[in-house]
Each structure stands twice: as C-alpha cells, then as structure tokens.
Image 1 (tube, helix red, strand yellow):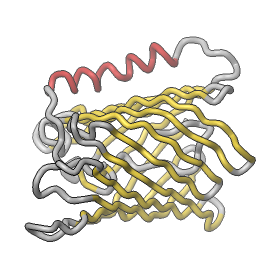
Image 2 (cartoon, rainbow, N blue to C red):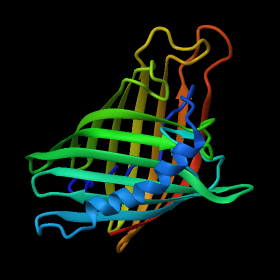
Image 3 (cartoon, rainbow, N blue to C red):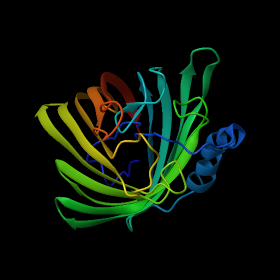
Image 4 (spheres, helix red, strand yellow):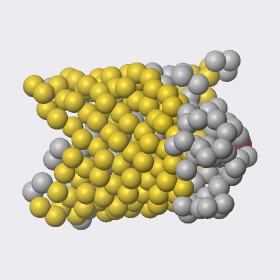
Amino acid sequence: MRSPRCRAGRQDVTVHAPHPLRRKAAIERRRAALLLWALAGVMLPAAPAAAQLGGSVSLFSQARLRGQPISDHRPVAELELVRDSASGFYLGGSAALVADRTKGLQPFAFKQYAGFAHRLSPGATLDLGVVHNGYTEYSGIVGGGSYTEAYIGIIGRNLSGRVFISPGYFRKDQATLYMEVDGHLDLARNWVIVSHLGRLTYLNDDRPAGSPGGVTDWRLGLRRHMGSVDLEAAWTGYAEDKRPYGPGHDTGGALVIGLSLVF
C-alpha cells in the first residue's frame, strides 16, 4: 500500500493469518485477474494535471504477511498502481503472482485501497483510509481468504506509525487490532537501513482454542537505491505469544530479497 505523497518506506508484501475464512477459489482468481482491469478503468483515462499516476513492479524471493511465510518460500511478483490527487485523496491496488511448485505462475494475491493524506507540518503527514486484501488457494492460506481494515497513522521523515482495525480478520467474527512502526535511516548516498515492528492483537475473547493471544512481527534490512530501481535484503520474522495450554509459542524468520522498479 503506497501513496506517492507518502514515501516513508515501502512495506513488504506481507499478515499473520491463522484461522482463515475459506473462499471459493474461482471467486478469488477472478478478483485477482479483474483487479488490473478495474485499476486501468479508474486510473488510466486522461487525468487532470494535478493528479499523479505511479506504481511499481516488484519481485520478492518469498512473500510474508506480517512476518509469516505465505508463499511456500517461493518467489512472488507484484504489480502496484496508485492514483494520487493534489487534494490528498489516493486510490490504488496491486495484483501478485506466485511461482507454484507444480503449476508454474499462478494468481497469488490482490489488494485494493483508498485513503486521504493531509500534510500536518513539513515533517509529518496524516494518513487514513481503508484496505482490502485477498489471497487465492495458491497462497499459504488454506482455501484462500480475505479481510478488510481501516487504518490511520502519521507519516514522518524517518519514522512512521499506523493503526489498523478489522471487524473480520479472515473470519467474519474475528476482530483484530494491528499496530506498526516503520523507520528508515540514510547511511550513505543511496544506502538506507529499513526497519519495521508490528503487533497483532485479537479483540475477541471467544477466539478458537489453541490460537495465540497476539503476534509480534519485525523486519530489519538494507536498501540500495539505483535510480528508479530499489534492491533490498531484510530479515523478517514473527513470534506468537505463549499459550496458556498446549505447545509453546511459534516463531520463525528468514532473509527476504526484493527488487522493485518504481515509476
């Protein structure tokens, strides 16, 4: 999710997804395929001079959502488009493909979002909006799934934070709160340290037995700017809270490499 007016650091393709809501695979495939057509219909017609159309084409060594692997450690390619107006409103979306082990390239995920960015000061921007994420059966989410979140945050020069609220996180009865802080620090010309820390909290007391009370995720990496191309290597992982009964908390991490062409 990216607005040309809010370039405080690109997020990874990635949300911890235990207990997904099953969806029909055909519906998710159609949504992923039609997303680009919808974006083209909304964004590509002649726009007033005050509006901007931007985006990126990216290739990742694997996909992780809020720290958890969801592409079976296979490469993922993503196309994202964003239309941004001078008034601060923006509209965007993305579609991704995964290199399936047996069937080759397959639809993997799609995303649509709309928001409003308002500059509070030279170093701070208020950002709020709604985002919908969906995943096909070729993701690590069994049967595919989707969820919608509303978000609000402050985008700074080197540090940004957002809060996301979902009334149905992969399940219509599973409300969640997700808080994140992202930072970046210039090391030298075209070299940047990027970081991310997030916390997912389940708001329902009646969550399924055996599920964790919350999940913490993180990312720490190094980014190299090469003109309009960004190369990034980051260690990404997550840890579930300890459960009162049953096995201990799950944890895991991996090096994720990404290459993005920004336009």
